[in-house]
Image (cartoon, rainbow, N blue to C red; front, top):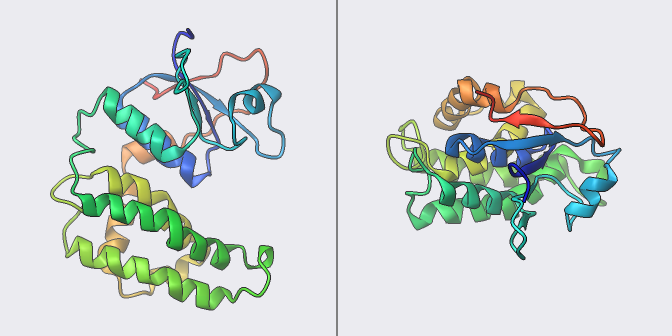
Length: 216
């Protein structure tokens, strides 16, 4: 068994962001290996069944020893340790995550990368994605977080994708009438934890020890 779990990550990937957020909240030490997606090391390809980040090798010699989905990594981390009660969330939170990972992510990709898809209208895709922003605005209802007085799993799981959506055209985003979601996003982006999980790390090379994460 390895000394600590190994997290294969890519700094700007929204899926990897939310995995790092959960691991940081759970305060589970891992060895972070930063992957450059155009130059994936063979060791990573041998570990990840999907060849995508994030991928967590827990070191356990079982079928569940390698976790290849970001949400599964989040849930695994909180099952080990959940000092902030992130998993204490109603079913509606899981429904929000599911919609984010499905219809919203599809509309976001069509909006952000229209040249990758045939017959896509980015303006229509943006309007479609805004339906989820309206849903989050209603869920917040003027509160700081989606469910109660503290962040929950849903806040951290959907955040990187809302950030990605906002940054496609930040000036346009800031001009939209969704002040609750805008404040929610800026609050998390300005937090020490977000700054910590977005630190830049060098590309992992064979033989490297990797980077300790979260940093003390």
